Length: 126
Image (tube, rainbow, N blue to C red; front, side):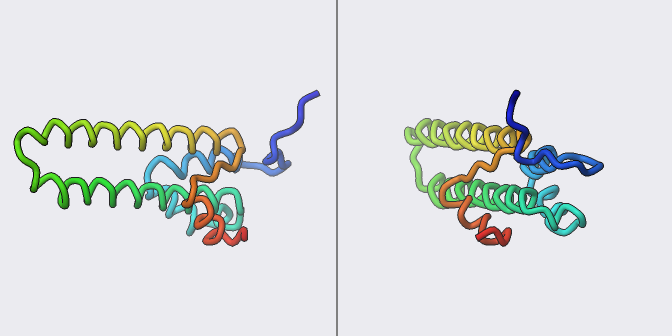
């Protein structure tokens, strides 16, 4: 006999795991879930929605700093290095994004350091 998922609850509708995974698609569903009852009352969904918002914000900041703060000052020979760095950032973000959404869809709470601690605090879990 296997252990039930920590989210196995007898309630109608969509599972918290699925909704938590949907929160990672873009920041828009995450923000909607933070505002929309009954999902804004569920701690698992609130945690993943806040972590998604923070993850997307960090990604946007890193890309902006790289594009605005670094790229204009590079010479032609440095453009290859910048392109490699950009690809690395995109791949790292995609892997993190997939990992977070898959963990959430499987009903697991996966905390990204230090974003997970902030998300817990904002979700009212600590």
